[in-house]
Length: 492
Image 1 (tube, rainbow, N blue to C red):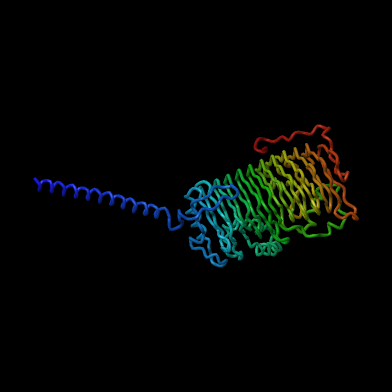
Image 2: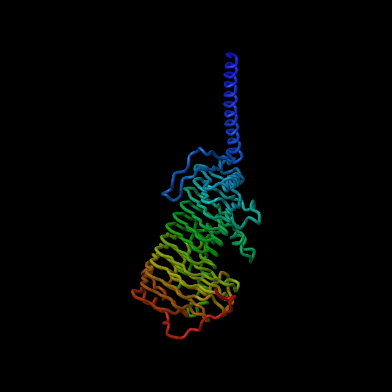
């Protein structure tokens, strides 16, 4: 009897040990699978237990996935090629929701032309606190990469921010352009790259960074929508040719605010001293005007065809060519721009203040544009509509033109150098519904006789106060103006 009880007790003890051991093995196996799972998801590239960035004024949520370019082999010495490290960090972060790619401060990363493309998981952040440096030697760029340096495409919900700099090292490109133009009739502008270009993307934010010394455009949005640019600084020296600050094309729903943009300036020429240029016919006037300036720099913001619902406000544009819509209709092409609002902008030392420029022979329309609360200082011509735009030595006269209507100039105040206003509209298709309200412009050099404002084939209304009085030169809408009629393929 005692032996039977002893056997039963021993059997119970053995069974308990077996059950406990199997549970322990099961837990151990589960932990091992978890570790392998983490490794297979790239834990060698980031640590889930690492610190998350703090919220930036509540603008985005903290992220638990941080990808530093240094962890992917980048040297950050300004000499070694760190392009592959950036691409590897991008590819790893692209698959992780709410990831952050870090370009750390106190490092300079030499990056060759690169494409960072999506689609990626939502709320991706590219945090630039260091410096990204473009190659300075133009010969290292292949023909296929000469259109842009940092090419971002097919992205949604991307934020680029930080205290760092994108440096395009454009001086070698500018010198190449000047030397080459003396030997060829072909434009070299098309061969120079843009620093940062977005293509077919939406829900974009670019903020706080600095973009400098671009070979061509500094920041470009092409076929994109719902874009916010804020608190950025763009600059290039005064001898940089055709270096637009921000270039918009085929994009909608764009807001650019609270930024400083300086893209060179025009070199002073005899045009500022002479008063002998004929202006009875605007073609002659604009041809002479364009040829007298050795243009450098370019537009603070350039708005091209296909753009609508654009809002620019609280910008500092100095030096530059001002805010420009166009040139539109080049090569007899269709151009459509609508619903542009530019307000609370300070423009200094510029070729133009606010300008609409179109090529002869184009078609389409520019409509519903408002320029308001603009402060100008030492601007050659603050208000410009130029439907005889020509960047060559001469252009042939053509009948077709991009139709311009619904343009409002409200409270534009400051000083000009050459002429307060020039509205040179097409002979065949006049500018209509132009509002000029509360314009107060004074010559920067009071001792020099200033030119009268020009209104050529432009119709609308002028509302006091207006200084100088020649600004009230608009024709009243008191005659029947032929409607702009074109087949469907020719209208917006």
